[in-house]
Amino acid sequence: MSHSKYEQTLALSGVYQAAALVKQIATKGNVNSAQVESSLETLFRFDANNVEEVYGSASSIGLGIKTLCGHLNDKSSRDIDITKYVISLIMLERKLSNNKAMLEELSKRLNKIESQFNFFTLDHENTIAKIGHLYKDTISTLGPKIIVSGEQPYLSNEINANKIRALLLAGIRSTVLWSQCGGSRWQILFGRKSYTNECKKILTQL
Image 1 (cartoon, rainbow, N blue to C red):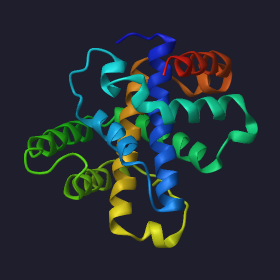
Image 2 (cartoon, rainbow, N blue to C red):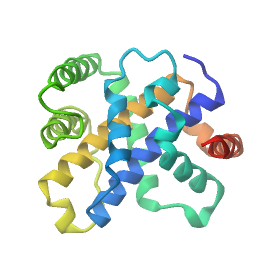
Image 3 (cartoon, rainbow, N blue to C red):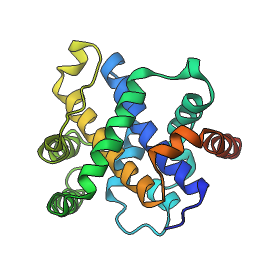
Image 4 (tube, one colour):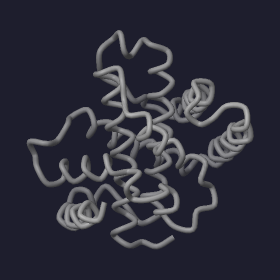
């Protein structure tokens, strides 16, 4: 895959979109279903030729691009919870990349879920529950677990809980992609300007 700043920015925006959607569900109890679906679709684009194909288009992760741009460009726009989720996803990805058995298990079960799309669409409660259970059975066991902050009535709702876990798995997918494109934590610390400029450039084209 290309290691262009454009593709790195798209992949990192995918991480931020998943984190932002998790925050919305946990604190508000509802979320834009199209944005959720855009994030979850990345789990089933196994043979994409480039990063943009994984997301379908840059506009599919518009929320993530805006969130990333805000976090890098304006301290007052930074959300502590979203930052915490992103950092946790990056840490978990490093553990996952060294666990070949878990990577194979994820691939096998995602293929199985996809094979049932004729019966249950991606946005169906049943599908989201299966993706959520997959996260719980795999990524969640790597530790430390991601503690999601929010309102208890929303967090204790089973549908919301499944959606949060499914989005965290999508966040891992984007984190893997970002790492494959040469992304690293050092770049977030010391390469803020180049990411911010790329975000702004992409946003003007959406």
